[in-house]
Amino acid sequence: MITHSMPTLTQSDYSAVLKVLHSGHIVQGAMVRTFEEALASFIGVRQGVAVSSGTAALHLSLLALNIQEGDEIIIPSYVCPALLNAVMYVDARPVIADIDAATFNVDVTDIKGRITRRTKAIVVPHMFGSAADIDGITALGIPVIEDCAQSAGARHGHAYTGSFGVCSIFSFYATKMLSTGEGGMILSDDSEFSARVRDLRDYDEKDGYVVRYNYKMTDMQAALGVSQLQRLPSFIERRKKIAARYTDTLSDIGLAGPADAGEHIYYRYIVLTPDAASFIDRMSTSEISCRRPVFKPIHHYMGLSDCPVTDDIFSRAVSIPIYPSLSDDDADRIAAAMRENIAR
Ligand SMILES: *Cc1c(COP(=O)(O)O)cnc(C)c1O
Image 1 (cartoon, rainbow, N blue to C red):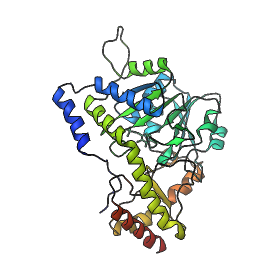
Image 2: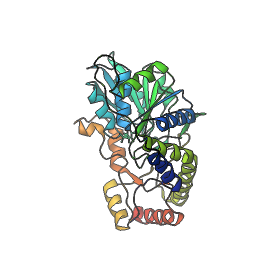
Image 3: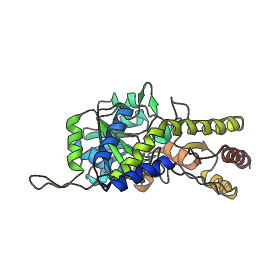
């Protein structure tokens, strides 16, 4: 069975983590700082604050933006529930927006129709490895949290995703673009904002009692992050090569994925099929593990029915295995199986 996704771990990763273990300093320390500075400088943003997950990064971003009970936060439907959870953690009201049929990213026109006096922030994920219409969304004048959990290293124009919002969040979950097992980061150019996030992530050494969190990253994870970040450009290059192989083989049979909306780093390679469930079944018979790119749209969890584009894409979209360690032979086997199974 060819697995759907996996982290890319090599000897240099193992040595980086071992070095921290041998040092005896395994909690948040100098290596976390190094990782924060390395990612911030790579993306082109001043401040980085590492945390325990992408979800924690979203939670602290909302707190640092001073989101209050009843404030409305716009998030797209075609994402994982982590975004909804972060909104619920701060007792805000989630407002669910539809996606664009061509890019599968959040639709700016749809967002516009959902803005009210109570809208306090928009969370904009750059889904599957390509940038959302971040210029159109920031132009609306509402604070934007960029969610780069799937777009680390993807550019929008001349700048990296993660450098456009009031802040941006990253996830380093095992199978994301780069991995620390679990982990996350908040980037921002605003040093006061970053200081608030830094204060919220750690409960100790506060003068008066305040509710704080333990969302710290360990130096073991950070060492893995630093080591992985060095190889991010090569990860992206390899993902693009595999994607080109798929696209070449499939262009003549009308299998379409997201439209080319600028650079795509192929965190996911998605094809639109007549029916996602049966295509996934047939690929599994060919010993290839495919998935729905999103397990269940947010508006389905909430019993809503006003995201028709998400409904349509959800019923047809299938994510094909793509990761740096996937061999050319396996990629060719996958392409052949797609061709065979789409024809049936
Ligand atoms: C993975 C992911 C998250 C959550 O990150 P965790 O580290 O798993 O908490 C948030 N947003 C998007 C778009 C993701 O893909």
